[in-house]
Figure 1 (cartoon, helix red, strand yellow):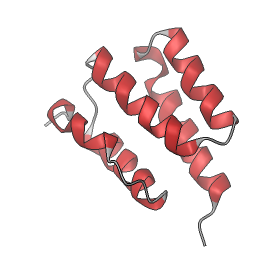
Figure 2: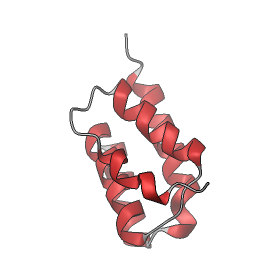
Figure 3: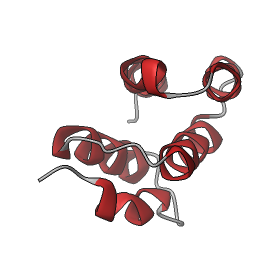
Length: 88
């Protein structure tokens, strides 16, 4: 069984790691999605924000995004568009 609370905690941890690199409004949007229990939309939004802001992310962050999306059984895989932004 999926521990939904744990997923939201992991999403919030990821978002907080990126907070300094995101515009405040983008952070707020994702935070509110997490708080509203919209984990899949929050993950998609975080991925979009990383892409638009051209943020380089470590492999660990990319792996966590992919693991969360897989755990939530997301059909679309918004993290795939970030592969070119993973730091070597």
